[in-house]
Image (cartoon, rainbow, N blue to C red; front, side, top):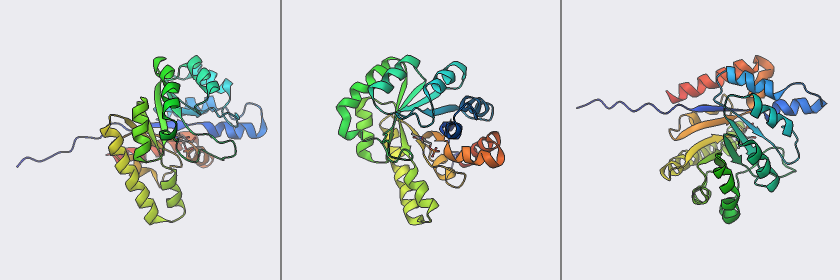
Length: 254
Ligand code: PXP
């Protein structure tokens, strides 16, 4: 009998979302704290990429932040945006490493759900074609729902990012049966998306308490985490918060 040694899981990338450094800056106007400085610190502290969401209302990240990130970062930028003509023009001007399409509603506090790809398949297929031609990897932020995954695959996306918000909310509110059911959905849908040839990412609402089970999903190649890290940075500093998240991800992956 031979001993079966499971293959090591692929390196799990950590994308640090710096939006909420800009939220704090914008609370007072001016230039402090600078999200680009946070991105450079994240780069030194174990991040594999930087994520920034240029919202239609510019409530946190600004156009100038994106320009400066493109000029200064050596890490890949994952540019989150709504599927609008304005944002497509901006993305085509900068050609970031990745473009992640997210739904956006002005009245929401954060990105509440995944993109409805299935309902807008035709429009989105045309929308992403020039982004792909420009060399951007196109990622679609969606719920763990087979209809959305199949639609993302059909329109030619290379990556999907699974929305972990429902799993994290259920954990935070002590609804542990629901949390476990959400985790089961994430597990099944990560495997399903991978079987179609899609690269799988995940994110939204992840914390030290919730990251490990998601990091352990073998098909997940990247986690994008922001709000918790920026909050934790108040107590421990951003570098230490990122290093601890990295440690928890690596331990779950081992
Ligand atoms: N991934 C996507 C697509 C997002 O829209 C967000 C929030 O902007 C995140 C990840 C990060 O979520 P959080 O800030 O809650 O960690």
